[in-house]
Image (cartoon, rainbow, N blue to C red):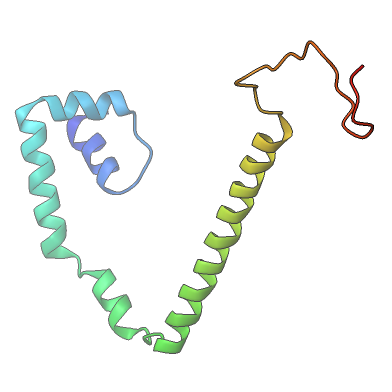
Length: 115
């Protein structure tokens, strides 16, 4: 592909070889062509995002609050599950002893005597 073709394919979201694009942009003329094509496209094409947003109805405040509440509930459920799973993993292993007590004599507390 030529420099013009690969840069045009990049801007049009068409398939292209990334190595060809890298080679085209390594050349100062290729970078200049990219800037020229971007400027030309901004002049020639209307901003479709602005047209699409201006014609769409805005969601109500209640809908935004409901969406925020639903997102919060999902986040709370997932984090609670993760916390519970981590806590269960920690609780399944017995703690390591810090002090080991060894007795040498047994004393029966119920009868009051020694053995």
